[in-house]
Each structure stands twice: as C-alpha cells, then as structure tokens.
Image 1 (cartoon, one colour):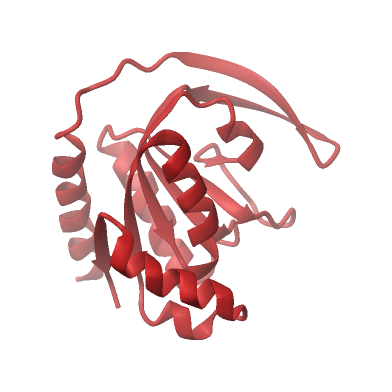
Image 2 (tube, helix red, strand yellow):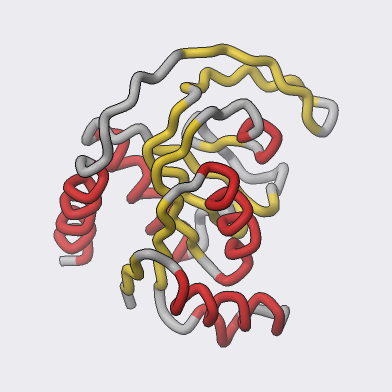
Amino acid sequence: PLFNLFLYFSEKLQNFISIFTPSRTIGASEEISSNSHIFKVDINLTIQVLFVLPSNRIEIGGLQTAYKLAVNLTKLGIYSKIVCVTNDPSSKIDNIFLEEETVNFLEKVELIIACGAESIDLADKLGTRFSAKKILLMQGPDHYFTPDWENSKKFVSAIKNYDYIIVIS
C-alpha cells in the first residue's frame, strides 16, 4: 500500500515537473577530491529534481523513503539526485548522491525537495541560487525530534513558505 502511494506521488511529481520547459542536459565528468578520496562522478549540468537529505545514512526510515522516491523518479526518466547536509563515510552510497561541492558545477536545478528539519538551510540556499521551486517532504512530526531548536523553527517556517508540501506519515 505504501509503495502504491509512493508511485502515485511519483506520477504527480512527474506531472508537476512537466510544466517546466524541457531543458537540454549536458553530460560532464569531473574529478572531485573530498576527504582525501578521489571520486569520479558523471553529472549532468541540469538536474530536474534535487533531494536535500540531512544524512546519507539511508537505513533510517524517512531517508529511505526519500531515497526510493529519487531512484524511482530517475527510473521514470526524471533526472534526480540527492545531496546531503552531512555525509557518513561508513555509509554505502551510489551514483544518485552528489557531494555538496559537486553542486557548484550545476547550471540549473528545477525542483528542490527538502527532507527533514536539518535540510532546510541547505535547501533554502540552493533554492535561492537556482531560483528553483521548493517542496517540503514532511514524513511525520520531524520538527519535534530534531536536536536543534533552530532547525525546528526553520522547518515550521518552511511549511508556510515552500511552494508545495507533501505529507507522508
């Protein structure tokens, strides 16, 4: 049942994105040095949907949902990536993840989806930089459980200020 709901929202998001004029994406391969490791990533300079997650530890329930949504949107032909506020080097990541430094190479992001109270600052910064629409993916009372009260206040403010809110509980 949850997967069917997920597919329903994926379809609605695809319809929402189709409102935008299709843009040409250019493939680029960049080497990026981070934490004394070299990552070779293949990025397009235009991303249709950029998810902003608090962490790359996707075994956590809400982050797992956002990760699956990004993967399924990509399978549907909507070019999606994930950027995380913090990166745990022990977590397994795949090519759907971008490091924050990699985002500097992007030319355009059409839609930003903030997932979690800790992601609001970065999502707002990226939304301003790319003049992108912003969606808040609210998966329960996240703002009650964040350890930083400032993040909680920003999350509540985002509920009022974001273009769309998707609530899954």
